[in-house]
Image 1 (cartoon, rainbow, N blue to C red):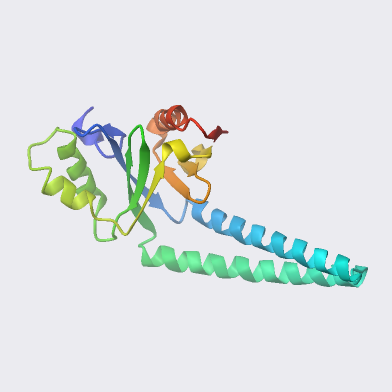
Image 2: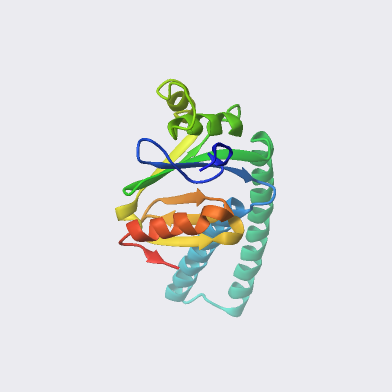
Amino acid sequence: MKKEEIGNRVTLCQDGKYRWVYEVNMLTNYSILFDVWKVFGISIVIIIILFTIIFLFTGELSLDIIIGMGKGVFFSAGILAVLSILGYLLYAAISGWKYVALFIMDEKEVTHQQMPREVKKGQIIGALTILAGLASGRPGVIGTGILSQSRSSMTSTLANVKRLIPSRRMNLIKVNQLLAKNRVYVNDEDFDFVYDFLCQHCVNAKKR
């Protein structure tokens, strides 16, 4: 692999792990916002079911109550949608309308590290170049130092993954465990490789 492709492409480093960096444009990639809406939607449905059961047991369920519940749900959903959009835009603005994520993958797990805003994509690519053995340097100091920085990190054990959901349009593969959902972003050129790798090693997962 050419040196200029390191970081932008999935790269096998000297420690046997695959690494790559992906810059998520929060103005054009709405996958995070969609997931927030999905959570709100599920919560609203659960509330509707609970109230319906209560009214059925008390014998108070009527057309007026159903209409009132419908109006309340519609009003609440509208407020939540607006608040979630405003919150997302505020978070995106604070993050500079994008965030840089580093991904580390091997046969046992995949890790998503959201890098601090002050760490630039070029710095990460430089560190990956050293770890890949295509540049001289001290990877223990330079590479590990930069790559160990993260604002948040999530690791999925592949043997525990229950479902893989690919979305080429979003450059996203959702790696879902029972109580944890990871997000793996990857460029078009390596999407098939990463998805096939995950399918091969997530032996207990349902694949879409």
